[in-house]
Image 1 (cartoon, rainbow, N blue to C red):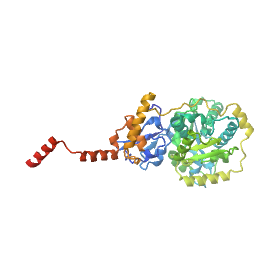
Image 2 (image 1 turned 45 degrees about the vertical axis):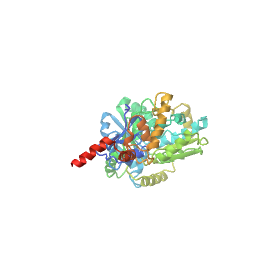
Image 3 (image 1 turned 30 degrees about the vertical axis):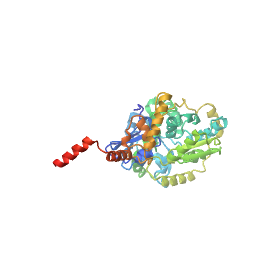
Image 4 (image 1 turned 90 degrees about the horizontal axis):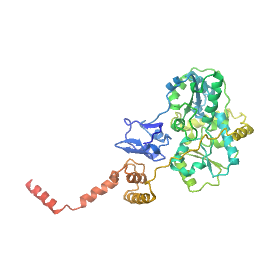
Length: 440
């Protein structure tokens, strides 16, 4: 089992072994054994798809608790733009930010302008980049981990620009420490997140030595306290400035909305993400400059830790964007200068974490691969998940690795029982059975 922390887990008391999570997992990490779900944790990318599909609340997200705020002298909330779409069109983002201050934060940071700056930085990077093509967005940490594990050859396609939340937290800590004359360690910055993958990116970042964020609080967990605080707000104390382009980052296609380069595509949803990454791995999409890839079906607005329905939230965000559409854009010259100073750059190279091969040597690997094909031939190809694995191919891999027995497939078991029934018993056994019958 992997040692790194994870932000998804399973409550075995609630799990009924329905295999919904097994089928939804994009890395095929989940197995149902002895009637409950568990994971091969080195394959887990903490995307939260299991949390999204679980009907019994057995798949849970281990994000930060609001009680962790007590560890810091000065607390700052950094909400994802997704938060603004959770309370309906009549609740202005200004009120949401003020409510955050009422429930225990000393300050809030409005992230949308940093999102727009990153869009402009990607444009600048693409004008100087020599390939390989297409370059892939790094704004979705689940996609980054998916590539590091399942598509290690595509790591060089990831665009080496830090996510807005990480850039903002780095600057904010330095600025506030100087203003308040306190150590950076006394300042706690918490991302208000729509997904467990962003929480995992804080606990175990790939592209920085350590995150400048101190935790991530689930929108689900903080929704109730914010809603209660909103009821007491008639007039806002401070009005904030918002970037309409940055607000668009909450939804699929938002990242490319603010880009001048038009040779770009947006891909969203787990099945679509896997399909596109397979095609890039097969050297397709080479005529596209940039791909925005989000694992959630509608981008972050449909993250597994949100509260509002995805369509309602999109409608609310669209109205908020229209209301701030007159805001001016970030100055391109400023972004270009910051880019030349490596302001947006990764702090370290992303290391791949590929799936372990079937065997340590090529010869043994070839033999294992042949064995896997033979096992797969015996399986029904129904991908029913009754064995606890998501599909027959994955189950065959488990059997070869020694993690499962082929008799765990119900169809193989039925065939074995049929053969036993048809097989004639030895004469000695038949004679004993006849004698026993006569005696009775």
